[in-house]
Length: 162
Image (cartoon, rainbow, N blue to C red; front, side, top):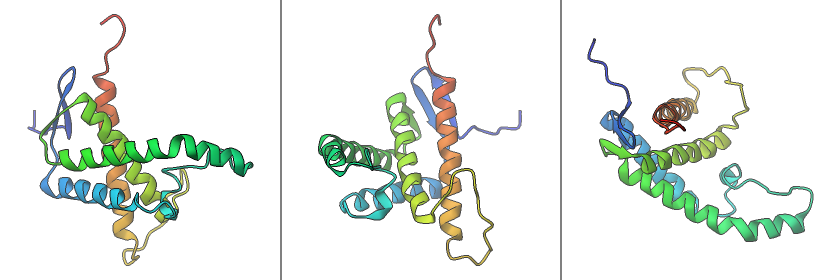
């Protein structure tokens, strides 16, 4: 072949080689750290997609919902994003860690998508001098990486009868 390596290669049923460049790994770590820092502010409007409203029409039920799930969601998101940042430079991951990458990358995309006011199935025309161009590029990069992570997990998922 041509010597191309897949970005994430299956090395066994629960092991994956991660072939990302240093810059991509640095970006992944930095955005995870940024979102972890943002989690400290419950009033941050960029977190609305990470912690969606459970019952919009009834404030009392919504308050009960938040009381039940918010602290767990906050704790797990913080743990996952921290773990992704810690493993961003690892060249091999196990299935559990790659699954955390999937959740962490998606969480970052939710925050970034809120900032960019992303509308499902609609990519705006962006001028080369648009100040949000780097954020859109990051959003697209994270979408590409998320797709690759999902594909690697899916391709190596155990199935009944194997």
